Length: 357
Image (cartoon, rainbow, N blue to C red; front, side, top):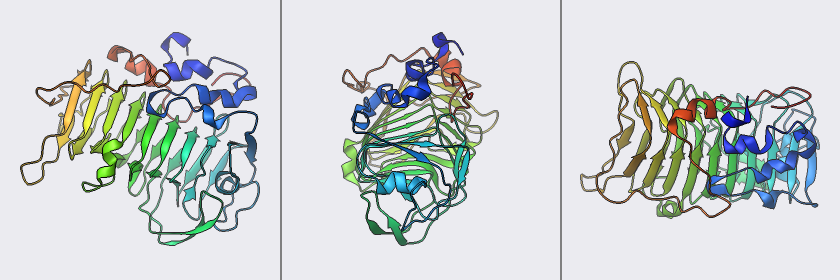
């Protein structure tokens, strides 16, 4: 794929044939509200290789993913020795300053518990295939601070953020989970969701815990260069309270709706490509009104392209809310006519053994 057609994140590292020798350079490539992830790199980073696909949720063995992600504290850059299918016995609670880097191998986390980021910060999740995640009852698990904790019931999300900040979720493939594919909840903020492929799912992405959780008013999330579909029903995303900048994404149909909200969130949809389903609901948006007196969710469409009869009910009046990115968060949003090539590599990449991804 030519550099001209790659998005700005991929141009930063995929064109370099020596990327394997300089894996941590990926941390300089992020954009949007996560900012650059340079807190994750430096001379003090621990390079950890997963060699064992087994899992012990309470007493993890060295060589397993849980040992690297939960037990080791400080800056950790996790890679995988070979292709793996990891069946997690309990949710994986990821420590602050951890990067999970699945580039160059095919790593599946599937068919049981999946990932949780709980009160943690500065985390990169890149290049994983996460699917068929299942609900879990309460139990003991190694926490993100290296101590065993009691964890309540979880619903079966692929990735769940709880009171997390500065999180970058890039180039993952997520599908067919019991609840949602990505939840950003309970005051989580400064999150970038980029280059992911979300498919075959009812509830895709939830931003904001519930209608009563007002701390989510401070939530800021960037959703960029993702591919939604086929066979996604709703929540791409559904937002409560906070602000989302949704840009240069490909929407390959929906059933109920693509973008929804409640509790007065703001969302700027910019230069996305919305391809309506062949039959059924062709309207992109959905707004929940409570008791008939709630202010409408503020959804603004700027330079979006609509195909197959798609429509977007925009908020009338007011000003389109700007992301107000700082210098390290800012990126140029491409024209919507470029969305197909910019998202063609969304999801976990298949990298050759010797050169470029």
